[in-house]
Image (tube, rainbow, N blue to C red; front, top):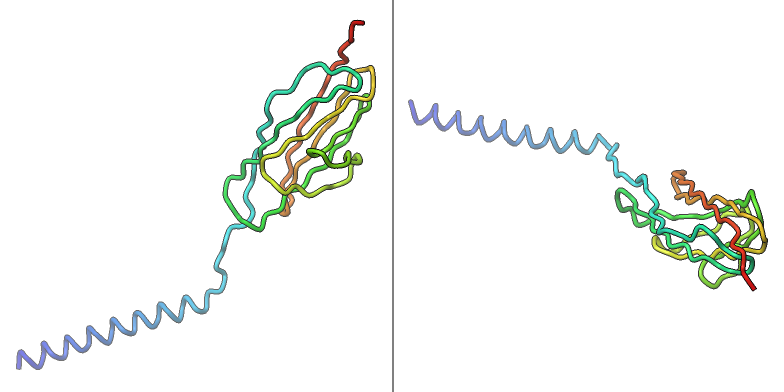
Length: 149
């Protein structure tokens, strides 16, 4: 009699275990709201730049984008607006950017070159954004450097 009870209990336990597994599998199949994070905030690291720049002189601006996570399909963009003085901003050796136009960034670490075209102080802002709408604003100001001569 004890063997029959043990055998029945063992079968019941196995069937319960199988039913539990099937239930978990079915429940996970119905829950298609699997969340994969793609949108990661980011910070922007800017190396120090000179405080003064003369007309026709350029300043190198080193920038590094530091996302909090990594989603390989995230795209980054840059735009700028100069609100005081005049100058040209470009990415490496490309053509200068047009103010308020958006340009793709192909690297998370890059260099911009700002060339002064005026003899007064210059101020401009750079916005770096990603494909999810996150955006960082960086402000730059250069005082006019008088060239003795």
